[in-house]
Length: 581
Image (cartoon, rainbow, N blue to C red; front, top):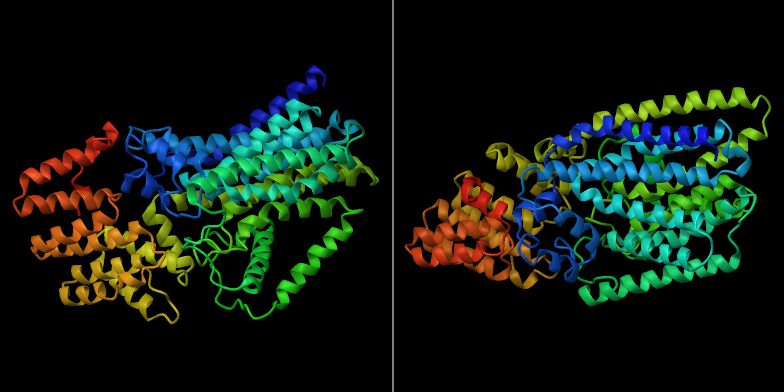
């Protein structure tokens, strides 16, 4: 690469970084949303002195199905209660997205034939591919939501794995880099296993576009073997922590047989394609699973999807575009959760498509250049294509700018989610909770009554907790107790211990509202015996001990509770009265 071209390449990279900063600068002023609050504010699981150890030696706090220590460690690198920690966490997500965009740009450059790299098109096409990835609205969920870092980091290490195959000559150095990068991808999120499916199609595509240094079949076998070693490392760690490869304790799965799950996966693939091509059709990051999916036989749409995949595989012998699509779909299949749809009703969240989009955008520029070189008036076609893509990208960027504010805080996000998808139980339950926090009890009660009357709705323990609390706040203590009695501990099954503990603590809180402090202390203590992770439950229990005159016990419990927690968190607990219910 000559010096002038190198300056242009670095200039393109700088422009891409600046554009992302301009697009996402408001994210720095956002608050925590959804899961962020659970493990960075409300629960002490990762907040104690042994938080780093728990990140490595325990399953993910919110689900026994997940083991993602690398991302949890990155979240704990900034003390949750520290000044500016929220801004720093959001800033890190933006920086990771910039890094991913630049890697896409450089991989796309490497995919080009050598004869095209020094041309105008060899700079513009990769830059447009990276720009398309950078501004696409599906990235908003991963960037604007701190918990989206799982998909951001997984995408980073998947791209670095691909870059290692491209940039490093065959040998120990290449295999070591692949092992480290792919291991880090798996420890970020288990969906990285999709690279096994995508990689063969990518290597075929690379070999077709390279004029030399093709990856041989023997090298492909060696690369797959190294990746398998990385998988073994991850599985050994996962089994030692969770106890099994696919956790039977998961409470976030789509309950259906394998035909039903294949049907759901087919619907998800269609949703994924629509999300890439036409993100304007849905601004909501949650894509609710319709109740019409059957599990008795393959549905017509499923058959069409399977036939389309078969056709793509056949066409891939001659068509580079088929290879690009198969690489993207190969990356997305683990996110479809054939063994269970996450959160029960979601087929695919926007962030699931982030890594597949990165893979496809790193390949698309080479395909575009190959198409152009066989056409007459190539310069004119190149300019028309560039203007068309720029127009599309501007439309995507405008939609992204409109979507980013929806992640500003809990209230804004869940109000939009509920109004956009009132059929979603998750959106309904969380919007109801934001109304409770803002003391809008009548509105919360109205939404609750509609929810419990909805046919086929399975009441979770979290819903029962909200129901009981709302009825008590509305002045109907007897009705609140009836709701409490609807829970049968013998039927708790795989219910999260934290949810059970919160349920009992909520009963203690409403007893406190009635000045039944002996009862309040009893139920709070019962909840904390099941799980003492909820900070609010602990503070409320300390208050109850004081109310019944157990001052010494209250003081000892408080000191024990705060002993191993970060100084900033302790200060916040002591000063912020809103932490006590």
